[in-house]
Length: 275
Image (cartoon, rainbow, N blue to C red):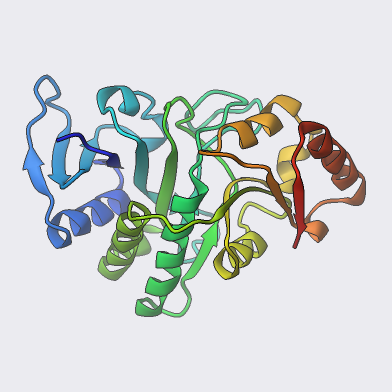
């Protein structure tokens, strides 16, 4: 039977393994053998495959060639200097010429915002089962892999080993991964702009409206100006049609905001939502 979706986690990632183990045990995944791939631990549940890979997920550039699926969701750890307990969702991509964490410079992965939104809502619902200091957030587009030819998103546990190995955090994230692969019920695809690496305004907007936000450009991504090619990719590499920009109005300087709006108009982005 053809697998529609692939869940991937790194054997080197304690959070990814935590999430994967919860999925295997609690959702009834069964182990499979994949000839010629001794380094892959492979499991299946209905039309979803789950694979444990060697090396970091951010460098897993060949997965969509090894597995002919429609989308890939990575279960992964999130790391931050603040060590704040966090559950996040984001799409990978390198918004600038730097590509220190996998992927190619100035290349974005394919986004599927509606599925990311389902993961986000499931994390928000599951947060009630965790200590009150956990937060849930969309993140700006960052790191690899960017080379996959199908949509991809990350569901992450952060931000230190205590959270990565937390059983209930693993269950909440596993539920979000599974929810993101379920039936879709609409959601207008959009690209987000402004704010910092975490996107509380976009997170709240996505949760409270029928808009689904995929790629997000934080203000620091425009430190050297607006890259027209990368900007265009954010819309063209969003699954289905995307002609909506959601702008954190106070999260961008006025001059930069004006330039961005002019470029979006030229690109034919028909709806600008101010938040």
